Amino acid sequence: MEIRRFFLFALLSVIPLFFPFFLQGSREIIKISLEEILSVGSLDDDLLFQWVGVVSDSQGYIYVTDSMDYTLKKFDSRGNLIKKTGRKGQGPGEFLAPRLTDCSERFIYVTDQYIPGIQIFDKDLNFKRRLPLVLPVADFRVISDDQIAVVTLTLEKTGKIFIFDSQGKVKSELKYSESTSTLMMDTVSFGMDPQGHFYLAYTFQDRVEKFDRNGKKLWSQKLLKAKKVKKKKIFSYEVPTEIVYKDLALDNSGNVFILGGHFSENRSRDIYVLNSQGRHLTTFTLPDFSHCIYIDSRNCLYSRANEGVTLKRFKMKYVYE
Amino acid sequence: MNLQSKTRLKENLFLGIIAAAFLLFLTSKLTASQKKDLDHFPQRKKLVLFIIDFDSFFCLPCTDTFLNFCQNLPPFIQEEALWGVLVYEDPKKIENNKIHTRIVEKKLRGFIQANDIKFPIILDHFHIFDGLTKGGTGIIVFDQMKKIVRRYPFPLNQMQRDEILNFLTD
Image (cartoon, rainbow over all chains, first blue to last red; front, side):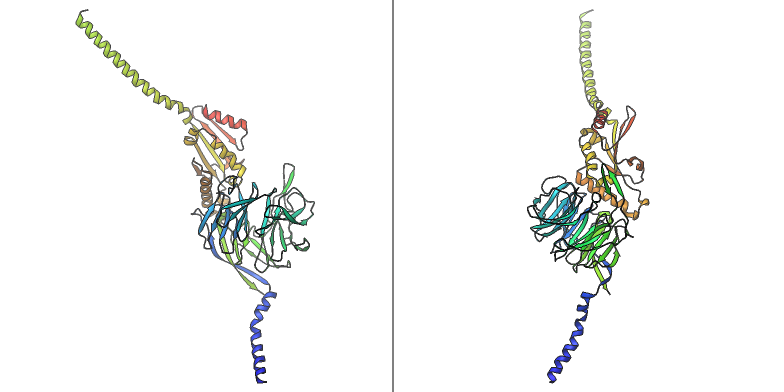
């Protein structure tokens, strides 16, 4: 009897110690602050001239595309340049305007604004092959060595995410918009969570949405109450000239981070944080203008500084309610 | 005329012929080197100045048009008479102005390295050429002998390219 009482007492004493862990799952973020932990590229060195895309692999290496010197560069976790590859051209491993990059366990994938397709390199930056895609890539995410999700720029007015296999064949597609609006208005930045859900931030509309893997829209949000973006006529096409949302990234907890553009209070610096249900949790501001954001597997945030000459990595400190 | 006088005359004539031949030789040699200089002299009195808009660095078709044109200029023009001036936004007009010039300098360095540019490009620190890039990157050609200055905005059409090349090699 006394032993039973003892165990009951011990159990009741220990349970409260676990309360914070249980509650954290239901507590939401009310504030995020940034602590700079790495800065790559300065005004005096030749590490980065105009970086565009960034990705970090599971070992902590950082891969960056540099459009000023037509290269793909690999840095270690401390910002030391390990290797760079590429030069101006259209041949294998060459670039005219390297842009987006992502990685799988084995490969690095790079798009080029003026060359169709996606170039594939191994982790030592050796060119392996090109994924043949006909249309320009607006955004893409590597799902695995055999699957890539791609949003293309198209003259069609229907927004779609295509899932390509390693040969460049369409395996499936997700239609996220049946808009009859102007050219490019359905351009999006997107992310995918481990469950296969898609999160979309429209570049030229005040729309943030979530879709399940079957293409069913789960929610849609407007964060900025932005009015219509300005447009400009180029030849016979009317194209938008103001950006609402520049980029989207997901953290390790499934929260959605969206970089604001022209309509934000701090243009190209404000980041809106939503939970996976689309509720706006908080907003924080980058110290410098950025064209993109990236969150790695260690939950570190990457952004631009010094007009593209510097890559910054921040540790994110969450404050919960 | 006696024999001695005839001999002296012959000797003087002979010396005169040798002297004349030597002078002729010297004169010919000078003329040849000067002629070589003279051949290039008109071109040396010409200058090609690229007024490069910094914003064009981020537009591949824009940079390619003037890079391709540079590479097609005669070698002596590229080596001796081609300069570039990089015009960028006055830092006073933008935020973060203290480092903007240094950023532009760094990007210019990267651009020169990546495109293997041989001619000098100078940063327009004092914004003297600001008004000349309103239409984008352009080229100004100077001809001192003919006292002509001409300006052409990029992109050039074929007629303008031919006109400039003829102007420079005329």
